[in-house]
Image 1 (cartoon, rainbow, N blue to C red):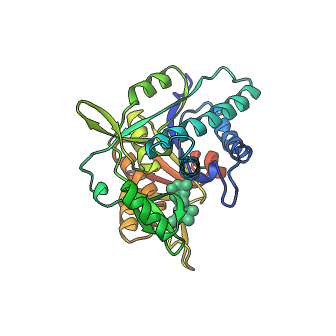
Image 2 (image 1 turned 90 degrees about the vertical axis):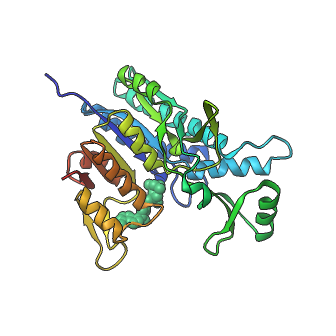
Length: 318
Ligand code: ADP
Ligand code: MG
């Protein structure tokens, strides 16, 4: 009897789609996505995993916002959450096509691949709505920023001496709204791409859903997705091979294994930067506490080795 394939949710970091310093042309992005999909193809070929893919969207949604703003006099600009939906289509399409082409080259063009435009429910009373903190979109001069604040009600903040930016709330993801559709696709052998960019943030209102201008952390949303699809493995792929203690100090030390208790303690001690490594570790802790077998944090290039326990940082309950 062949071993049952393990449902594995893979969260792709920003550099899987766009490298620092690149302009973000379609060709550049597609090439990066192809490199990423080559790794994913190896996982599919091993026959051990059923893939569910999620991804970041920071640079892409930033560009869409800029396009909307620059062209606002000739084409009606869309709300941030609609730009988020657009970015899911853009990135999902690139992954779908690249992965299909690579799998077809290995004789596995029969595997269905689908992107699900995904809404993620957040709580209207989440404290994040009182404290918008996540910078999005282009930089402005102080004057432009203050005009946007008074004309559009944007919250704006000075960003580390680099200029002014719009900031939006970053609430906690509560529910992947399309989870049943996603589960059905997985059951039908599909590779699914879902919850891109942390999902389209929505709140429940009058018995229905309504989009809100916010940004959900993609690793935390990926964790919700992983629990909802009953994944055994949650694999977070970023631009560092391992989680480090004393990061960027002479005492820096890579961690190959962490228990939940250790991860929590190091997090409390401040080893993981807020907004980058801290949410990944938090998502990993949540996943294994919710019954997941293991969470892994590593780089794209080490993904396959890390799944075999030979690289990366693995987080387990004990
Ligand atoms: P992604 O796009 O993959 O989500 P992020 O930039 O959000 O990438 O998070 C990855 C970054 O976290 C790394 O590039 C690294 O600079 C940073 N980081 C902060 N603290 C640590 C740590 N303790 N160990 C490893 N990396 C860390
Ligand atoms: Mg990140």
